[in-house]
Amino acid sequence: LDVPSIRCDVTIIQAPSVTQDDVLQAVPGHDALFLANHVNVNSYFLDRIVGSSLKVISTMSAGYDYLDVPEIKRRGIRVGHTPMVLSSAVAEIAVLLALATARRAHEGRLKIEQGQWEVRNQFLLGYELRGSTVGIIGLGNIGQTIVKRLKGFEVARFLYTGHSRKKAGDELGADFVSLDDLLTQSDFVIIAAPLTNETRGMFNESTFNKMKSTSILVNVARGQIVKTDDLIKALKSNKIFAAGLDVMDPEPLPADHELLKLPNAVIIPHLGSATLRTRSDMSLTAAQNILNGLEGKPLVYEL
Ligand SMILES: O=C(O)[C@H](O)CO
Image (cartoon, rainbow, N blue to C red):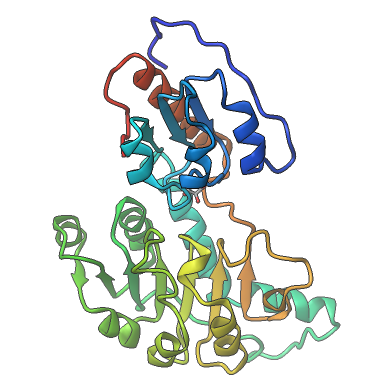
């Protein structure tokens, strides 16, 4: 941290799962808000803190879909987030999910537990990244880092889709294509795009119908980009081969959820940035956003 010229008193909200109401109760008398969890800051929230001295908010996340940024700024509050510092950790989780799904890790474990380990050479054959076509939905910093990490696996072709062709895509040797082309050609489809009105529900029955029956879906972005019921149908009917999800809808996923019963779904509980190093970098970045905001300087990552 840059040494601040101001002294801050900090109130930490202690709760197992911090709610919007917990935060609302704590805000009066504070100039800044450090959001360590995904708590909605929307009109409802902002209407209830009228007259408070809140000047700056920082999330401790790259995604900020749970903030109404225009509304926050309209009320004269500055707002920041923590992209970049987590790209490597999230990209590693994407690689983990691509490999675990392709090589049927969860299904294999289930077979062992069910006493169905077959000793024959065609048992649980999977797919390889080597020679495959990998499609990235959203070639932002995380998407680019995923491509860099996957290059060592001898992927044949990288495709990406988004708003426009990117210089970074050219530098990485990735081809900018339409969503339909990406869906029909990719062996691995990796979602690394933010949740917006455009991406919400982007993966649904019609999307799955366009994907190869041997393809794998990996989601390290936001659960609501994929329609869960449609994904379950696609996995059960083998419309696609498997899915690896770090994020899902809903979160937390109930322990008895249908997704957890599927052998071809590898599910982990939103751990993309959950390493000691990355969470430490994220918290320092969020703290620096706040100190800069309080001192009237540009935030490290301002929205
Ligand atoms: O958006 C992010 O940074 C991750 O989902 C962690 O919150």
